[in-house]
Image (cartoon, rainbow, N blue to C red):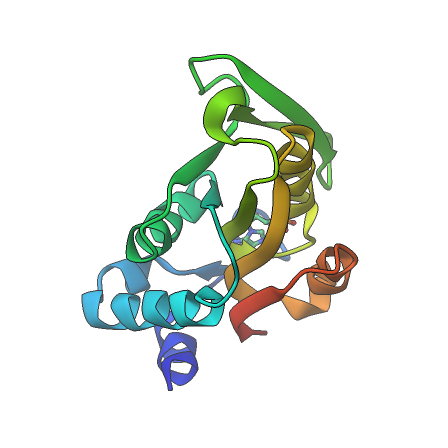
Length: 175
Ligand code: AMP
């Protein structure tokens, strides 16, 4: 049911941020508190039985729904940010973009060894940023418990890459 609503609420923006890219704009979801709550409830129910200790959200849109999931499960939220944004002692990793590389960072003290962490973002495209986030979590000594997305762009093949972790990979809707 929520999948059906989500499919009509997500806006396709062709040629953004560059030609040939069909951008899945989820900002209309943030303007619809009822559907947003249904989406969060659905994600929370999906992961309620996993033994989780924290939710890690990837900057920037992964923060918006990630905090809501963490709050609903009464778990800590871990921000995974673009390089240069986090103020305290941190660990970082780089990953390949279509052109060039990007770096993301996490505060060193945001996990404890063995902690089970769910990684969350709005859209799963190639899986590069989620894989990089998983590397950070593992480097910190914590464990990746699974991956959660609102949208999977299935034709880009991210899900099979993440399934190699042997942990649940869940998206509310797949295109
Ligand atoms: P990736 O690392 O390739 O999985 O890219 C994931 C990140 O890029 C996510 O944080 C998305 O927000 C964003 N992204 C990539 N492609 C799209 C797209 N077609 N529509 C919306 N967001 C996208």
